[in-house]
Length: 382
Figure 1 (cartoon, helix red, strand yellow):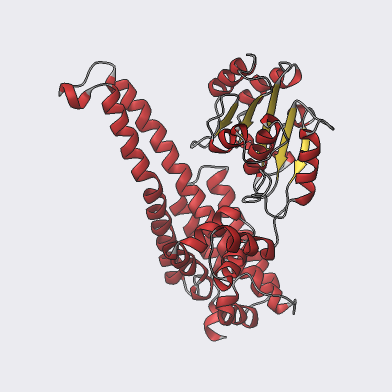
Figure 2 (cartoon, helix red, strand yellow):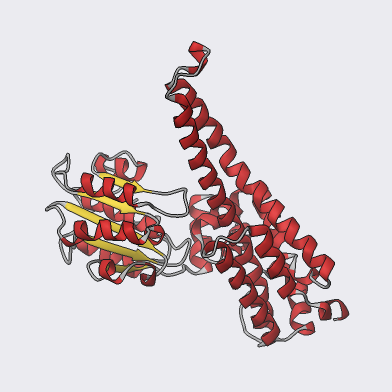
């Protein structure tokens, strides 16, 4: 097993990265792009392991193990739970990037969400990428090249990842998760090539049930009341799921903070505790907001898949549907509506995403407005 085995359906990217790790076409700055779930950060981490490995990514040596486990002294992975990466964080990275690596090979900095860098953050990063330290490698990850400023991307070597096929994802799930073929096939289709989502769907019945609730919505949106109920339900369900994801971590961080300041042992709070608690609560609130938006966004993409299936059925396209398990609902949408109407509904969903992600509109309001754009009274008659 090598470091490349976890990159599903990315044969061309793997060949380019393996060649660079062997010294052919190596660059000091890299930009990994690809749709959500394609494995951008996994590709960057695998490449980092290959660069630190004496044999180009064997997957078994100490260097490979520590990079993949996130504990290598010369590999730093920057993740954010916030909506953006601030200039202060980037300046800290630039300072650390100017230092020599601890080991004999490379110092590598991976920025997982480079599309979340602010304009000031990009400006702080630019000089470090223009004039890098001799053994420092920057790896930026973003959905598309357009998500990164031209002055940055022009100095990076581009690695483009693609959405893996359902067959590739299903085979990966059977091999790594050990689920039956039928469940692997369902998870691969329903995830639409998103590896992390596919794993969750394959492993967890609750995750599968939540998705079933979401994809059942389009055929039910036959009245104003149904739309308002659907908006409220989707907001509540996604908020609950996001809270489950963050609640345990929040409690653990609070306990660690209390232990650090000796709150439990002393029975009182030192003066420095209050500002530290405020900072922690601010960070946790930002993380909770992002998690909720991420879960809502995933639900919206599941709804989009239903309308796309309906368009495919109406057009007589061959092949399995993303939502094959609800083919009856999809065919009802296709018969009762038109491809043009379903395209308008997809546009309404993407408009809601933009309102939430770009213009900071509250999810409840954006979802209500969106659902009104999806109403399809003709489905009931159909």
